[in-house]
Image (cartoon, rainbow, N blue to C red; front, side, top):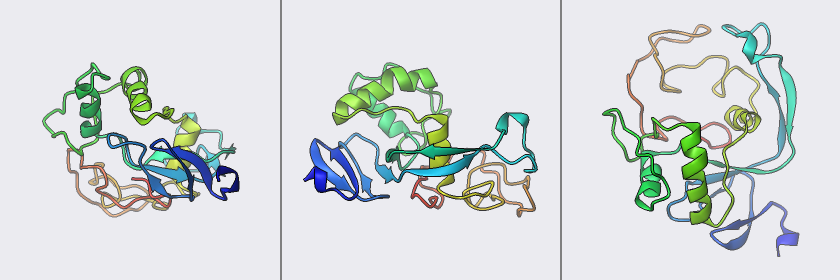
Length: 195
């Protein structure tokens, strides 16, 4: 029973489930793949001595996420957004800027587009309440229990993320500049299994 759950009591696809921490699940066929994150504490912001830090990144402070949280495993894709458009839930049809659709991360959508169109449609399709993460929840998920500047450590390379790798950071090796997005899942996940 749900009261005997030693994991995360949840309803997945209309069925009561007991999810283990970091377990993958999907609420419906059109729904994003999700991961159940543990409650936890982290230092939000960056220390004053961090290379390239701006004043808007501080002060560093302790944040406690007191609840389990389900987070999409990947960024929202064009395929997911296009499902919403096809079902009549999303009116905005974003341009792909010539980079392709499918499993490419959706671009040319605003916070308002996601909040007013995609999230309500997704909640209805799933029979669950979906919402956008708060800034603290997003940083907690992205940091995935790390205390370094990046989830990959003190530096980051273009083997870890898609950015202009011809510039370096904190002594990282030079890399490539792809000049376009990659399909979601193109790099290794963080410690929570998020891409």
